[in-house]
Amino acid sequence: MPQDITPAAILELIEEHQIVDPQEPLTATTDLFGQGLDSMAMMQLLLHIEDRFGLQVTPAEMTRDRFETAAAIAGFLAGKE
Image 1: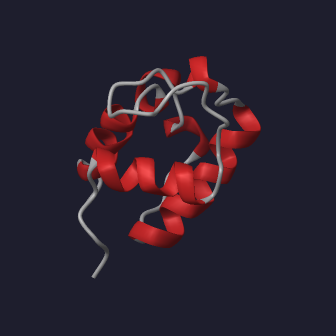
Image 2: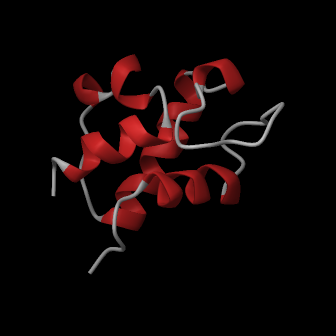
């Protein structure tokens, strides 16, 4: 069973796999795009999300609103469980 999908779990993935190189500590509400999240980094993060949580996310679901913060990502993914 995958671990709970929380903002902290998303931040852990981002930090563990060095998805972005933040200029400040990341929080659940940090604008990830402002910290360097781009389309390549989103795809990298998506692969880790699918692996860790066993969820499938289509490219059409990868919107800026859904991936703007760790809280937004966790909320979006929790709705897919």
